[in-house]
Amino acid sequence: TEETSHDDYTRTPETPAAVPVRPNRLFVTAGVSHGIDLLCATSTAPGETVWIERPTYFLAAEIFRSHGLVLHQLPMRSGGGVDVGKIVGGDGPPPKMIYLVPSYHNPTGYTMGVEDRAVLAEWAIRNGVMIVA
Image (cartoon, rainbow, N blue to C red):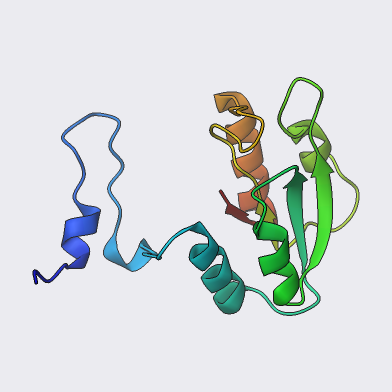
């Protein structure tokens, strides 16, 4: 068997759009469910809030609940996707984490626009919210 190093995962293609990934920022998992579970175990505490779009990946909510997290559902707009304006303009305290599928959403197929992604990312940075996508 061939041994794999962090360098194997952090190499980037020689394109202008490539963003280098530092090995200490890489989180290798056995799949999406495993990744969500590990993030919950290492980055959350029971009773913290997670905002989750609905509908969404069918196992996500159960994984969050199994870690004692409180779920707040974000409904989809009629045209698809969550209303980013409502997320960033909300009056209540921000969640610990927000879970969404911004590209080729399952089951709707919706892809969040670049502007909405930027607004959501800026809001998350300002409020210390982890985006899990």
